[in-house]
Length: 305
Image (cartoon, rainbow, N blue to C red; front, side):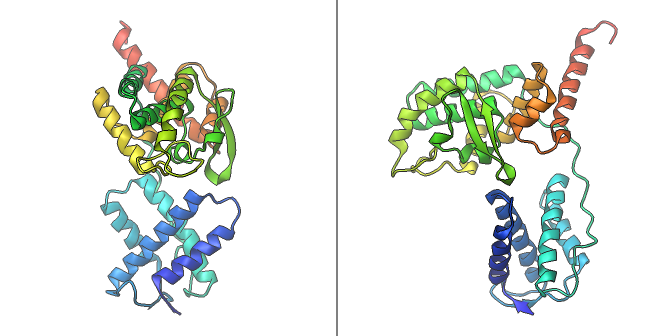
């Protein structure tokens, strides 16, 4: 059965949206990776992307070749493991709808994810980053005020960047909490501290100046729409460079928040709930970071190290 890339992707996306528990980000990732696989197969077959092709003979070797191509583009083992999981879902759908003779990914083994420890700032570096953002905000520039509020909230709450950019004004609680909708559309309430509250309070009047048309988004872009995660990722890089701290991503700042909570004596279950981890095992990675810090401090300071 010949099909076009766009037709296949549209039908697959409809199927995903019928499933319960898949967030918008998960659907977007599954669709993006399915499209990447199809475009790779079309390219290998020397077909134009607007030309129909029969996928009946899709094989495991084709998927492995696509994964190898992704790896050559610099994708990490953790990314390849996620790609493998989403493509298994896609191949099951292709087979169930009669587009392929067999489920090509049924015997696909995902690469083991990297066991590298999360990259984090130490507490002094985090303080420098936040101080630099505060100094820029003192100019009264609406975007600088936004950046300061966003980075303070990100560090205080350990949110994912997608969660931060998805916040609405009414997500903020009166008691210094924020209501977050995370992976799998699971909702959680996350507390934040006085510095983040002050930064948000200072930003809200500036938000009104950025707003082009009525909207609920808490953090706005320069054009008045909801802040794009890619834009904020660039902002974090810029702030890190200006503050003179190691280059980090928004997710590294989330890692830093989790590690500093554990360093301060918080228990794993609490950190798990704050971060929105489904598995305690995911949260336990941060205990290794704290242990590494302890070993480094011991090696540097103890006379019998």
